[in-house]
Length: 280
Image (cartoon, rainbow, N blue to C red; front, top):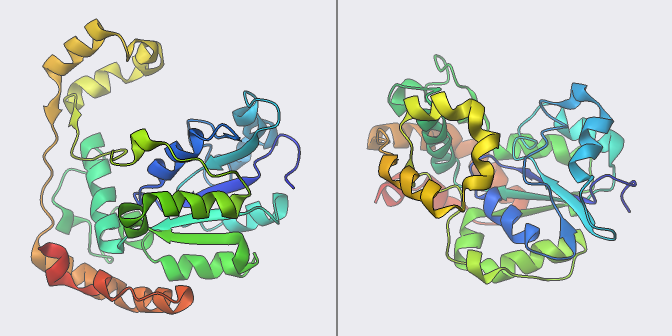
């Protein structure tokens, strides 16, 4: 039972592991309410206070089970202890992806934002990187240790990116059972990627110039004239590739953590360490 006005379940990560897809599925469940933005309350916005957090759920219909997704909670050094203090019995969902693919996807996200500009290999050396999150966020076993120290393991339902790909209906059913919600599946999302990095975007300079108007133009997104103009300007995003030798070095970096994660979950994750098969 959650405290009034606070979530009864959390999706805590990992970043770039398709958590947006499960978030969209749960948003389509009429028994649930999840806000659109990620609150990041237990991570980067904790100092803004509990009233800031409660405001995310102010629009929930009466009787709805409240939840939220903030994908950075899993790797954040203080999120677990902060959640344990406020919501000690809350059920949580963790979605994990091959850490090598996750690291490259995270790089691509910051590349299209203009935060990073060099090739992937410039950021995938732990000794010199200016973006340690690319590597550190994929050390899943190390992060889960912190959560298992504070919560009953049965509170944390772990699923894999490949579970979503192979059995989306079963994945949603298991998540609904874990959080105590009736099963509901949004068929329109079954084959549609969410937050697809291969999608088309406005050029970076134009996105930067228009950023202050983001909230103002949001209501126009379904307007055919607005979409027609946008379609004239968008371009397919092209990313520097992840070279085979860089991928192999990442496999070596993650090998011990992946092997320990497999033992923790009772699952064979050997395919995550097969550099040649991943590159194929």
